[in-house]
Length: 157
Ligand SMILES: [Ca+2]
Ligand SMILES: [Ca+2]
Ligand SMILES: [Ca+2]
Ligand SMILES: [Ca+2]
Figure 1 (cartoon, protein in one colour):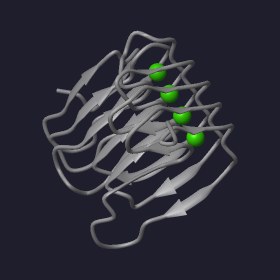
Figure 2: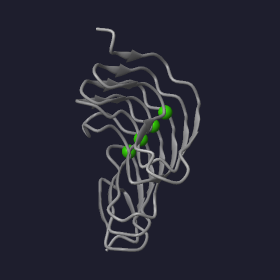
Figure 3: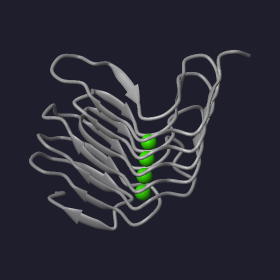
């Protein structure tokens, strides 16, 4: 098809800085096809919409998820994000931005694959935290947060 993005990911550091950085992912990105491959362990900060591993806007995203460190995200998926987003989940740490109404998902966008053990932190609430499969810790921080699939809950009303 020519629009697929496939390959094992490296270990990247991505820093968005101030402003609307729109969207990025730690590993493969495809806007029209499939994004797949084993994810690297990435450090991504100050990007509004983040996928820790593979991101496909319209197709399937799959692969073994890396262990990503994501901070300052409004919307985050720790592992593969696509239609569907499937694969083995990595152990991710995800920290929200200061914006309320964050949506922070520890594993794949289709929550039925295997998942990693994730640490998810909200900031100014309300945020939505979804640990997915695995053994997860969710800390809502200030505000009226909602958390699902979290084995350890901190600051969730
Ligand atoms: Ca990654
Ligand atoms: Ca990951
Ligand atoms: Ca994960
Ligand atoms: Ca998880």
